[in-house]
Image (cartoon, rainbow over all chains, first blue to last red; front, side):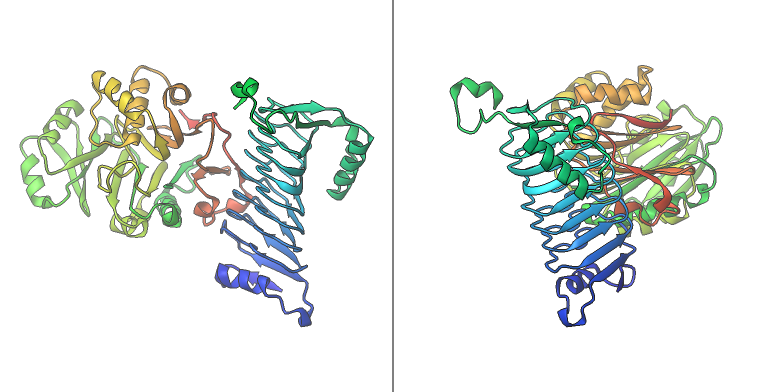
Length: 227
Length: 293
């Protein structure tokens, strides 16, 4: 089913995708002419495939549950923000705060993601095939952030329990973020994520793992300079 | 909030369409700034002639025309809604001094190539009022304002121009503008409003007049201007964008072989010809991107 945003209002398109008639068993949808509109595919709850043909604005696929969304273009701020489950695949670049606060699901970005990728992520798995900007995984709580390129300044600042895997160069680490040993358990987990993102050719041993030093969990006067 | 837009043409292909392209960009940025709008267009220049963009507010055009006749030798005076473009071969300093005597009008910019129009109101209405669609030119910059720092007035609208053929639009807010204004006033720069962006424009003018180029000027601004900003700035032959190091204020660039377009959001440029084939990227924080010089 084709939904053309030049002919239909965004609200109508989102309402259609949010209230799928299960009896008709139509699982595949295409959105035409997104033209940078915000909140495309926000709040989907059904197990459907949606392809967006073009560039989108802010909060694409926000709060997604179950849906499999592919964007054939770039995405604006906050793609997959607060996603619960399902998958979002961005074939272009992503702007800032990709996957922000997301609890679950899988976000793949073929290009680069800019600053604050995975900010406050709470369980989502994010794979960025390019590089990420500054303050990525800021206050990230759980889940995995995999970056095949480089990371900008202050990676993982004030990090909780997210695992970060970076293949390239890290410009600097944020407060309480440290490089950690990559053991078999982590190599296996990373292999699985790379495979899921169809990056089988990359070797997990070429990545470095970063995580929390757990020194900022509770206030200690000795750490005051880190706050 | 606020929306900023700009187009710099790399070839002559779209010179006649520049106004139309910029007009669509401004209208699409209404959601980011419904209070006022404005634009600067760089057009072909005439040798030794300066153009003065003047907002005559409520003053009748004939009254203004009669008022300056005999005081300023002008080659043409064209009315466009409540703005006037005055062309003259006289020394700019003399013309500016005379225009300054007219308290009812405000000079919004001057230069050999630049024309600036700005007014309070919805971007759609402002664009229509000045017939932006019919403008041609080489590059242009525009702004839709959601007022935060100062009142909704013509003087509080962007673009700001504090030097010949210079203009600046800004999304964000500066925190050290009062201090900078005091320092720049001492150096002889006049400010018309309490607006933070006008101070940034004055800062840029001051550095450009000390023979720094646009890129060097904006790079020194990264050290001296404190606050949140994405700036788009234009000079007679140049065009640049810079975002502060934190980069909270958005920007996206689309570049084709014919043009460079910049906007706060992609939706502002979705109507541009060939944009889906353009190289689209987000300018990195603390890096100056410039075209021309």
